[in-house]
Amino acid sequence: MPQDPDESMRPWVQVAAFCNVAMQEPPPGGWMSLIRILDRWFVPGNTTEMPPSTLQTTLVVMLKSGNMNTTATLKIQPLTPSKKPLPAIEIPVLFEGDERGVNLVLPVVMTIDESGLYWFDIFVDEQLFTRIPLRVLYQRVAGISPPPESPKPEG
Image (cartoon, rainbow, N blue to C red):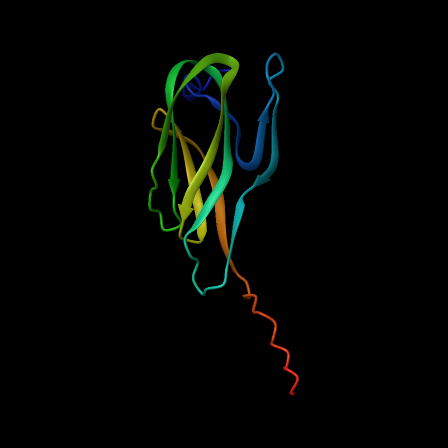
């Protein structure tokens, strides 16, 4: 089978997801477990518009080298629902060829002030490889009011 020229210098996406917990066991196995994979984040509130809130989750990106045998820059670029770019993260990585790869487990803590669909674009050396969606949903909940006062006995 002839090799696609685009395959000569590109890694392959094995996993790109958000989760609550990512655990990687030590070598020789090095198995990765992702617990509670998510693509929605719920923000509760009691106002008509979503107040600024803190998003706290874990981003896991696992890439396999394939024919790539070099160092590269992995960039994660978040975009808000209104397409505003948020600060990007750039990480130098080493691709060693074949099944060897790069496993990134990154804590994500960011202030969000907009509901809707956020995208996290994953680039390797400025080439877009995949996008991870995360929908932020604002849920208005009724406020808890104190119980009514009991009438005081006269006398």
